[in-house]
Image (cartoon, rainbow, N blue to C red; front, side, top):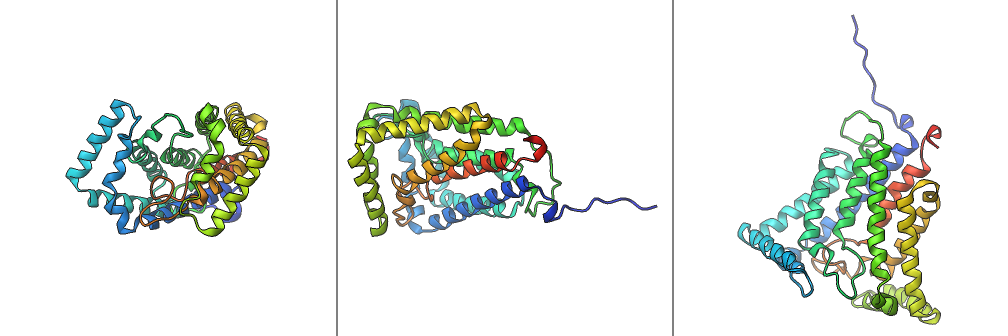
Length: 318
């Protein structure tokens, strides 16, 4: 008597959607690989404990300050150098897991909670939310992209995990989409504040410090254009753009087909100007409040997960 066995799917048998999800997952893994490389500088470990000061800068609520001091004391008692090395190793494990698909979705869940911890400590919960604030910080979008890694079942294809492909849950993808929309809505709220509307160009000017000549020239080109059009008008445009992106992400439906490329283009514009392509890349840190390649470039990866979901759906689901 013979027992029937089910062969593993071949590359040709994976759906376009599964391949697209896997490609975005791998791209996210390479981002983590770069982040790990940025952290290998001794300067990162040297100033690691000091980064917890984001929780007690002027303007933070008392409870955030208390939490930050408590977490800093825990890290100090364990040993800042040891904790810094733990984060480096964990970043490397996340990179390897994302690229290879090994131990997913376990490491994706780890990535969610790890980034929420980073957001609450070295990210200061994205605050202080006072005059000049524009977004909820960097690590929160990393956490959300790990949610997309999970909801898309991105390890079903091009993975060494050995798990059988499963069924994609539309409800889970819609949940991730709504969370992304809420993040954009939060961003848009701060863009409508009078300080941003009247000082939007200053965020590009601040990004010039320490930049290589070619990036400075690139940013200056946009500053010139914005000044010619009118800084206030540009501020209104940014607020409107983010509001529209948030609205259609929250609504969903057919509007996603055109808001996704708009969101990608807008995010790329922000990353290359206000964030200066993530630069300057200083020893142990970057301009993005830490040691990462950027913030709005990770928004692009979230949009790419949505693009794989929307544009690569099986014909019967369209």
